[in-house]
Image 1 (cartoon, rainbow over the protein chains, first blue to last red):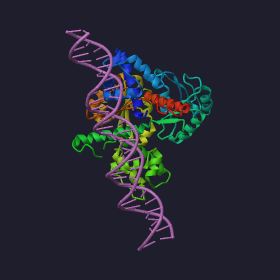
Image 2: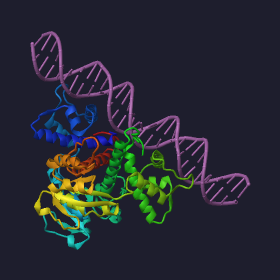
Image 3: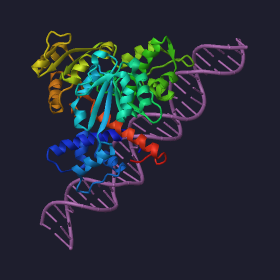
Image 4: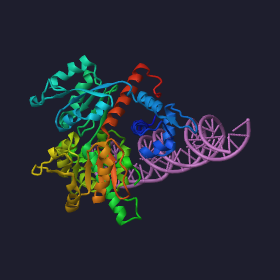
Length: 216
Length: 216
DNA sequence: AGTATTTTGTGAAAAATTTCACATTTCATT
DNA sequence: AATGAAATGTGAAATTTTTCACAAAATACT
């Protein structure tokens, strides 16, 4: 399996499928899914074929079966426990983010150095940062979200990994380095906006100069 | 210019450059930047060459000049005004997000239907949603962040675009459709975690079965 | 000044990803 | 049962993206 984007698309198909299911559909065709997530129908079929997902010629795919299979592939057939390190603005927003819960992701606890943030009896408790290592070990947590200042992020990541964390979703604007056997995905909000700004500018230039489409 | 990833890398180079500059460096080589963001040195040079950025053979690139050029390409040579529609957990976290301000992105106001969220005199004011259209026109805003529930997202997007918004950064877990002349980038937090979960599982399987690396 | 070394810039090659195109199967209709 | 229409599944082609490899230039050193 070599195609990284494919996995993201599988998730997108799944979201689309839930929506179609809610609308009362029972089966879908590759072009429905393609339309829904903005790719070619052949891309959908190729993606499925990579994972041995098959439908019926002329009959399409059965939505329930397809959702189940996708959840299985994506590891979403079980509930996953996640901790959040850094309970500033972003961190605490994520702690309250409903979609995680709905999607079988359980935020077990938050951790922060700032005593003002601590709330041991809250719905989702917030503990001092030195309690994170024992917590990970005791609860066998494998996933963490890092939302600390960039200066602290790598250090926190190293600590989490040494405690047993395998996957990190990092919101600090820094590219985390991970040893073999663990993995970090980075979400950089400023970079996302910057990227958008670039493409908006390209758009504006096109408007002025519809010819020379492809120049900086 | 056909390479979408290239733009993201330019932003990453820039982040790395600021860090290097803070450490006292004056010039960099393609392998420094490559190392910093995790790509091949030839990738760095190819990216630069696509935008006509050149250094000196054996002398590398001058950091200040390079940062300036990258900011220019990325449209970050001016301050950009952004509004946030939807001031729930995510929306209000973003309103307080410091990195935006530091990076020349000015959050001008928030908008929400919930009167409890309104705060017209706050540092960054929050207005009723029906004030968004006049606000956009009056202040010539081109960029918006959408952080409303998924059910409302497309409708909000259409409204914003009709008011003059050109670029949308969308946090609702739905793929926004945009007419020609405007653009939306989507950040789906659950999808990011799901993706991470998949790759953590792949990692674990590799550990058990270091051979059959490439199977679902 | 001359030589050796380092680093860029870029065509060409390789690799990855997407799209095409069509044989094959299934379903619907008569 | 036979016919026609609609969809899948997948090699092959096309496209995109990355990496290689090396000539040319700039710097450092003697």
